[in-house]
Image 1 (cartoon, one colour):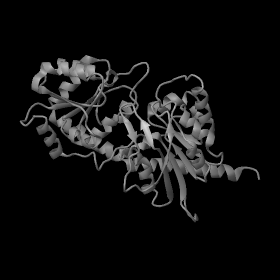
Image 2 (cartoon, one colour):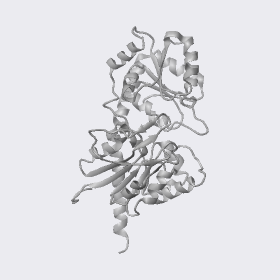
Image 3 (cartoon, helix red, strand yellow):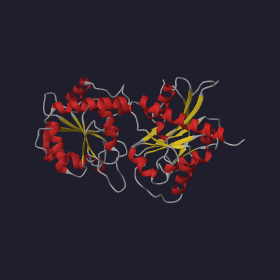
Image 4 (cartoon, helix red, strand yellow):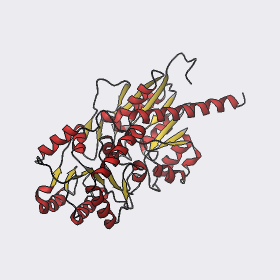
Length: 394
């Protein structure tokens, strides 16, 4: 595909999430996977006001890409976030391909669609798995992005199904999930034991049921406490996360004494150790009229650490889990109690699921696999564009 070329192809990848160095893993792996046939430039904002904290651009010494830092405005409102003039200047340069990690219905997505040359093929990434109808101007931005793009990338099967029915199927697409860092997330019994000791669980005891994520109702925190309260099989529970339900969760935990731990403020580099301290990860996400699980990053991180998973059927979860975990109806408490008890009482079943999860993490969600899928789609679109150009009348 690259024979006869005197220079590497140039890829520009744009995303406000690139302000965090870990989130630039995709363009880094694309650069590595291309073996020098692509020169990758990532565009990141200098600052973002996230829902949790203000974030200044995080640098990384060993990045194998060019990093362009641009100003961004209204960063505290994702739908209104837009980039400064420097992005328009960058998009005016000669690129072989542009990858936009911005939703097609937000101002930043529209900004890319408006500024990019018509000769430059580009794709956007979307994780929208609800059939939403946007108020002006966002509906017009969405339609403009779909019209202008060469193709689009869906973050999951549910996303592709919903958006294809909205007219996105007029353009080629691929379903490509997020990835997981297998060097950081891996089975590590020593790290898990260290966390248990930090939490005061020095002695052997019942299996530890873990929760990892925001402490909010839609992530199933209240639902899980109800399930645990009704589960007669011995258990211990560890909740790792932050959110508005923390106070309520601590009140519930007080009735269970030494059997429950609530851990807040965990930095991302320590998450693998906490996962390794769990015997089961529960992901009881609850669909609401305005939200359903888009991917479930905690699921693939648990897989990579060899932790068996039991999860609800909200949104993308069944597709993310496949046959590597137990899927339970998100509203059926009786089914949840039965399924959780079965895992608590069966070390062999937990081992079977842990092995399946490890295999799934390595074959489906490794960032290197994800990067190759992106490159494959880019090449397909370039080939289609070249064929169309050759068949066009002079």
